[in-house]
Image (cartoon, rainbow over all chains, first blue to last red; front, side, top):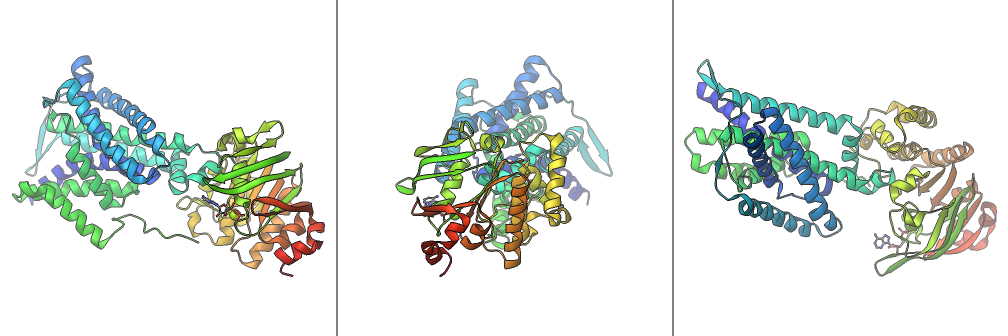
Length: 292
Length: 233
Ligand SMILES: Nc1ncnc2c1ncn2[C@@H]1O[C@H](COP(=O)(O)OP(=O)(O)O)[C@@H](O)[C@H]1O
Ligand SMILES: [Mg+2]
């Protein structure tokens, strides 16, 4: 029982990272039907920014987190503007291949500029472990969970309650009808990239704290897993992405706990396949019905 | 108010609108009637800035709409109720209406909203409901209410009666008349030629991307060609 609870805590910590990343995938897909394969690399940029500001300016966790979110939001908006916007009316596969290209560009660009080596993420928050009822939980795990939950609640408020959030949903449903009420879809799409990228940047700083090590390719595997999380949750569904993220995190730590570490990635993909067989639209995805 | 001259619009190699002239004066109801595929929706989409004109001018007061973005055109006072209603499903009725007022300052929105609820009491009853759960007729009213939220001077409606039950159709035409009496100029696109011509000051018959005939509503209703082609007899 203790080990189960312990794994649940570990799984939720990791899962909140996947959830933050999955949200960006799902929002971008929801609005322009693009699977942004460079999203995991935005998370890497966030981690590197955190590394840089903490080492250079000795800022605290909050400043590192917020500034990483701003920097990655801008990076996401610039990438959208330069790489994806010119392809808005091209076939979807063109944009998809471009996204893969952007991903390689960011990974190799960072390796080239700053070196491909793995580095230690500065520990701005000193780790303490609390043990209660035989379960050990670190302050960093609590910080990750709390930060992720706050960001998800804020995101939900933005999407549901603000004018821009409502416009995001409107553009996702019908871009042309949105333009006819005076919404500029380009602005809304840019905002969506900014929002999703900011969450990825936050996830990058959090994972730096959690795992201590970062490198230019660190976004690849979590990027794919977060994509799986978004699909499992129902791509395009914001609550679905959050649930999918936690699910994948729990699954991965669970598989590791029963001694099958080597198969943790395979387990994630098996779950993806099973869920898609049973629920092709994902857990909370809409089965698209056209109203004629 | 609106003066369209020599308008041509293409979809790649398809010439959908091939030199159309028409005008709409303040406070009029003008209708464009014509068969499916005649080019009516292409014309309104060009007026709304969604499509680029290949040739011609669209004067609205002293502005040329062919050079303006869709958002600027809405801001200048032209709103469209698109064909097929195109309401935002997943958003509530209220959120749909608020999106209609996207460019309207917040402090003016309440008055406009009260006016729309007067016009369409059913929208008030359904304000917290997902717009996708509304009936077809209610969705059409929502689409009209959403366009009115922009406080347009010119309201363009693209086949508002399409696919609706007969009781809703007459209701929609009544509402169009009321809106017009309140000072909104109307450009009405219809395949339902009889009812459109009955409420219109003037009409244009569009066929194959050109204006085939024009006249007052009653002239066109009495015209034998129109009767044969569009009024079933
Ligand atoms: N997106 C499009 N791409 C290519 N052709 C189109 C498109 N939309 C409409 N058309 C063509 O343009 C012509 C006019 O269409 P439309 O303006 O929709 O007619 P209407 O509204 O009068 O039924 C038709 O021949 C139609 O097939
Ligand atoms: Mg049409």
